[in-house]
Length: 200
Image (cartoon, rainbow, N blue to C red):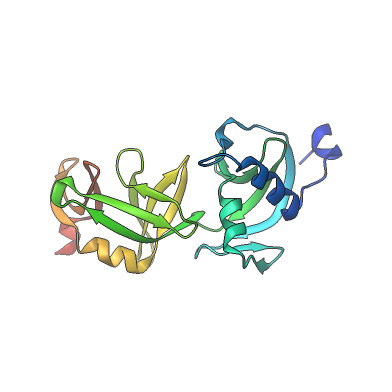
């Protein structure tokens, strides 16, 4: 692929320089406004988020939770690709599955009025509902379910196995999109998990 002049003249930032820029951007309350930042692409960084949520830099796990949290706040999804973005830099990283893992959840209310509040491995919280939908995919070979919940700005969390088992206990059979489904209510929205007929 031919690089643009800007890309040819740029130097890919290191994890250290990105961390410094992210730290500076995080001085205010809340998450940095990455959706407003559109700097020039600076190349790909040797950083990877594994399916279990572990972040790697140059093949080594990043062992500082605070640093992982900092990087997670400047993560951006564009056209199916993941980037770390600051006001002046944008680097591509590799994400094996979803960028986050939902490691726990709590239930507020019950039945159709319940709210499922998910907590991720980097400390984000999201209430499943219209703005934070849940979805379940199935492995075409094994049939193994993979449940996800939207956390923010197109960034999803893979719901871990222990949490999914707890969620199944909250499921009910409902009429949805012209068929019977076994699924979950949260935030006034019904999220189908598996067709009722597949459960026998």
